[in-house]
Image (cartoon, rainbow, N blue to C red; front, side, top):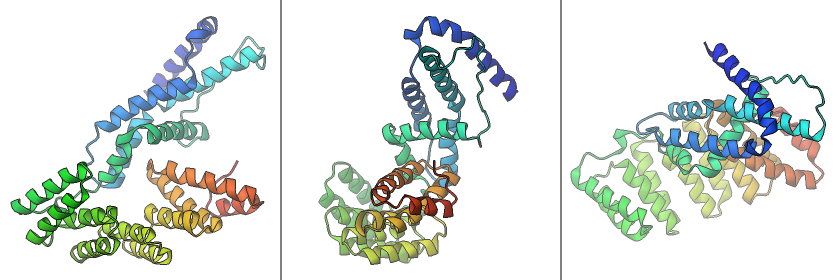
Length: 323
């Protein structure tokens, strides 16, 4: 059934080619199509409910929203390129064969998928919010109505960026319910925003006393040490995160950023960022584009330093193809 639908699509596509050549001004550019398709995918992502879902499940739903139009975008790109080649004289034959690879493992399909995904990460605000909201658990929320009231007031204050008011209410929430994990986690974030880093660390550790594997505090302890400019402690914190959650991309991404932004060790930064990239790609996580962007920055720096061969070697060791 899928093959039949694909054949029909390609047939329509080829039949309309001659007409489009006559009406060249009506032929949309691949950039315009990418914008339209990514906007459509963003609406699809907006409809996903990430509450109480594992991150992998959310990533699969996001991937499904992107997959729907990969072939359409790929065909449009091929159509536009063929049209340009005809105009430039690169193609002179009257008979034109247009091939579209529908295999999700093909380079052509992956390239189209990644271009849509990158456009989403640049322009669709809901995609990162959705991934961040994944893995919400009812166990992290208090059942005490008074604690919840303080918590909701804190959320409202945070929305207005009134961090002091938020802190006051979060403190009341954890006072009423000392096992209110979300309140501890958010209290830590608010302390961090006001520059009270030691209090932020204390809040995160209080959260970990209740749930030693809590991802939010484990990740934010490392981030808080970065703000304190205690980079080795930050790396150690990420390694503690790795012990609780082996092979989590955020560990490699976090350490990679420290080596890139602060310790200025491009080789170590590239190695860690490559590992993060591979995990994000395997999980079909949209955060793949963030890792890819940092790798691009590292390439420019290593190229300027005459270390292109070392750059290629590190990518090869991480089984990443470089062209």
